[in-house]
Image 1 (tube, rainbow, N blue to C red):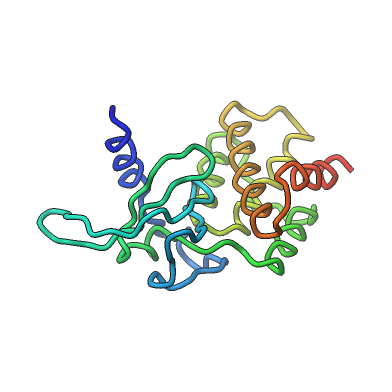
Image 2 (image 1 turned 135 degrees about the horizontal axis):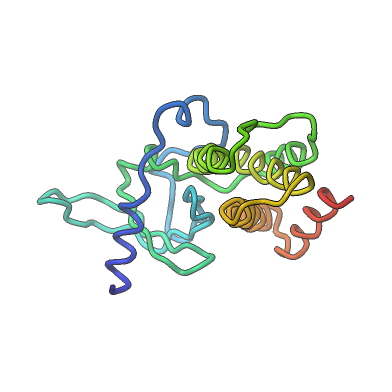
Amino acid sequence: MSSSKKSSAAAAAVAPVTGAAAKNVPGPFRPMDTFKIGDKAVYPSHGVAEVVAIQEMDFGGQKQTVYVLQILENGMKVYVPTSNVSSVKLREIISEKEVEQVFAILKNRKEKTVDSTTWNRRYREYMEKIKTGSVFEVAKVLRDLYLLKNDKDLSFGERKMLDTAKSLLIREIAIAKSMKEADVEAQFKQIFNG
């Protein structure tokens, strides 16, 4: 499959968040017309991306303005029509104040957001949280999986999700605080191993 077909497929594969997951999603959202070329934005489930172009594209005979995003982790390109920014939960990088809120969530051992007993039900519930696009929900997933990991072995899917949540948070926090990713990861290790 060519790179452009993969990119288009990736853009189409991420469905808007609906139902319970779409209600009261905490997190910073910026109006769609304020992203410029060179801005960093967060694309749910994929992480931090850079706006590399803003261009007109033809969709079914209709011209639409799209943001061309390049995902920093893997270089994948994603095309987001400016009219779909809210539905896909494209948002700006969190502020330093919000970074502190993320760390407060990670340190809060009393709240557990998913109590399902079977790994596949937990996996679905965690995936819904990641799809919300909220950095705070991703932080809860990471915290819960780390705590669960201390109690029992994680399933393959849960281990992969833990890695995904950790990667999403590390990259965004590093950019928000102008830190090295390794330093953010060291802070995570201190929280969960300390």
